[in-house]
Amino acid sequence: MAGLAQSHRAVYPTSDPASWGTSGQASVTWGGRWYLVAWDLDRDDWRTFRADRIAPRVPTGPRFIPRELPGGDVAAFVTDRFRGSDASGGWPCQGEVILGLPAAEVSPYVRDGVVEELGPDRCRLVLGSWSWIGLATSVGRFDADIEVVGPAELRDAFAHLARRSSIAATGVSTHLVYCES
Image (cartoon, rainbow, N blue to C red; front, side, top):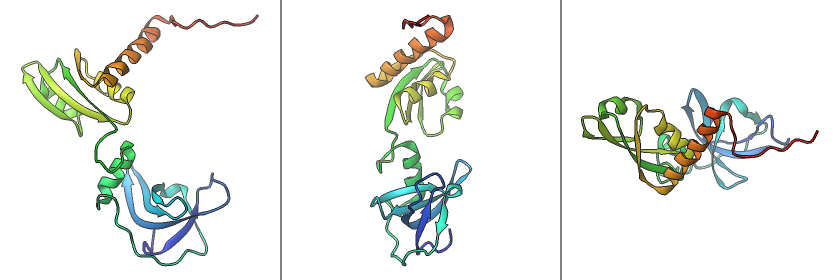
């Protein structure tokens, strides 16, 4: 990603042959992959591009004055993007539960959530995710009783997962399937 003050024309190998223009701002790693954080000249918006999926086009574009990233911090910007969040810094879906486990057993497995001890065998967990189903499954990994404090969307996600789990456990679907002979 040399020459970050140089506009670049690039293309994803699977995209249409027309290239797109970017003003590359930073190269970062996330989950073991390199990404280019760039201003997309065609979409007039910030984007992250997997470095292993882009190829430079010649000629490159004109020089540019680097823009300031939303929030001013490339690490926070990339984290928010991969969370599915805007510049608010939080997850799009955030919920609160009471778990029937000591806080000391929960906290090592919660990276960016908050664990509060409520007693020797109970704790409050506030956690976020990109979806309500994702949040419910994240909480459900703990082998413990769960009390949903809120919001209602999290309770609904648990109900949805309970229906799916019931079908998986019994092999009986509540949906009728008709087949023509």
